[in-house]
Structure formats: structure tokens, C-alpha cells
Amino acid sequence: MTDRLPNTVARQLFMHLHQLGVAAAPGRSGVPDLVHRLGFVQIDSIRTFERAHHHIIATRLPRYRPSWTGHHLERERSLFENWTHDASLIPVEFFGWWKPRFRRTGPALMRTAWWRQRVGENPERTCAMVLERVAAAGPVMARELKAENPEPPRGIGKAHWWGWHPARAALVFLWRTGQLAVTARSGFQKVYDLTERVIPQPYRDHEPDEAVSVDWHCRGALDRLGFADHAEIARFWEAFGRDEVAHWCAGAGRDAIRPIEIENDDGTVRPCLARADLDDLLATLPDPPPRVRFLSPFDPLVRDRGRALRLFGFDFRIEIYVPRARRRFGYYVYPMLERNRLIGRIEMRRNQETGTLEVPGLWLEPGVRLDRQRRQRIERELDRWRRYAGLERADRLPVP
Image (cartoon, rainbow, N blue to C red; front, top):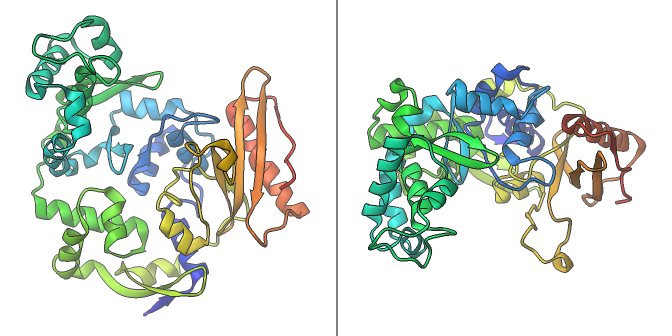
């Protein structure tokens, strides 16, 4: 039985479980399976080159097109949108497992001053008004409520009526608590409808209790992480706290875990919990592919910044809110993965007017050289994203 994982093996395992070891099944039908294997895919609004969820999937799925997720969200109903640590695409068969989260979310949101301020003086009335509107008139976007209600109803304050107005806050509250669901997107705007008109009945009817739900979440997190401590298991879904994970490890989860030591990038060793089937998993672990990939800043491989630093020695921060003069790197940079190493960062953006994939910056990690073979691998990946975006040309690589 393996008691300690060398750093290179730990990296390789983590990559493999995050679907970066081998290519996923090609074609539109492969999207739900990929999201299932990852657990969820984060959604983000920033688009200097491509939105986060499209980039995450396209990194792993050959010939991926952005319309494919819309197909599965809006037509097949094999995916739904809700919250993990942030807004995410989630397999629809997981919907029932979100019900304990829905029950907790409402009171938790209403305890925060930010939400109370935005939902207005009478949150129950505002939510009921919005829910009745959707039930009677069908799917709605926040901007439509603004057009339909230029003035707030009596008893609802005007301070935040437009912007984060009470009706918009109510839409988000009803979505976060499972009463509404995202049925489509118009541009990047959510279109909300009643949950019973979006989520297929078998998944709506699933009602797990708290203990069973904790067990499912913990096992699912460890399946996808391979090894983790209590905090990392809890952070994966952001559904339950570290104390609940520790209780699970000492009780219902004892058959699913085993202790192990993980070697960090700097040579130190960290005690963790691993999947009980770790040795079988390691026996079939593929070699990392000999290529470079540009990861989304929200990719699951680097989402947990502490783990990325310990495992890969890669100190990654998003600097979009950092003033230009204080940035170490670019506005929106993509970690570069080569085999099982994070070798640097690249900034790229699409310019549709000139048909150019622009590359404002390239930064390599200490000790990484831009030799001829590495340059060629980076250029091949750049050309892959150029073709994905339908652009005519790509900038030459800048000198790192």
C-alpha cells in the first residue's frame, strides 16, 4: 500500500482526475459527461478571449463549440445552473443534492447586510411578487422587470430599485434557493423560469436528508480530488463546513478514505486523506500528454490557489482588480500547463475587428527556458485557440 506520493505522481494524479490526462469523448454529446467528471464548471462574465466555462470545457473537449453548453442547458436539460463556490454549470442529476443547500441559502443570505439592503424593506412581498410574475407570464430577465416596473411598488424603497434593485435581488434569491431556475441565456443575461418548468421531475423529486447529502458531497469531492484535507473537501462544493467533513471522516466515510502523505513542490510533506482505491487508480495512471495547454484562470486545476502553490509551486492570482502599475503580470492571464508542470502565464485576447489573436504578454516561471521545442508547443496551442475563435492570425510570441 502506498503511504507517500512523490510530488510528480501527485501532480499527475490531480491532472488526471481533472480530465487533463487524456482527451474527453469528442462531440457535443460529451459535454455532460465531462461536467459530471469534473463535478461542475464555473461560469464567469469576463471575456477578453473566451468566457471561463467555455474555455474550461474547450481545453478538454476536442472541437468544442460554445453553442454546445446552451444545447444541454436549454434543450436537453442535462445541465443546470446554480451555485457551488460561485455560479456554475452542474449535471442535472445532481439537482436533488442541492436541496439542503437551498434550505440553508435563504436564511444565510438574509443575514447579510448586503442582501437586506438590495432586496428592500419587504423581501417576502418582493419575492412573492416576482414569483407570481414568472408563474403567470413565463420566463423573465432582470432587465424586463425593470421595463415593466419603472417605479417600485408601494412599501418598497426606491434607494436600490434599479441597478441591484429589489426585483433583481429577488430573482437571484429565488434562483439561489431553488424556486426559480435558469432556463436560457440571452447574451450573458440569465433568463429565469419556475423550477418545475426547467428541471425534469425525477431530479426535482429527489429529497436526500442532511446526513446522506453530506456523505454524497464528501465522497464526490474526494473522488475528484484524489487526496485532500478536511478543508479542501469542504471547499470543493462549498456545501458543508469543515466540522461536518471531519464528522463524516470519523463515521460514515471511514470506508472511503485512507491516510497518506503528499510531497509538495518544495519537498515538504503534508498529511492528507486519500481515496481508498488509490493504489488501483495509480496503477492505471496515464503519462501526461507532451503538449502545452492554456488554462482558464478559473480552471479547476488552479481554482484552489493554495493547492496550486503547494502541488505545482505556482503562485497564481487574478489581477483584474489590481491597478496596472501594480500588476506583476497582465490583466487576464492564462496559466500554461506543460506535461505535469505549470510553466508560466500568457495573456491573450481576441480582436474581431482585425481578425487577430493578440498576445500582450508571456511570463515563464523561474528556471523555465523558451527553447525551440517549448516555443513550438506554445505556438501550436496559440494556433489552436486562434482557430477556435475563427481569427485569421495570431501575434508573434513576445520575449518573456
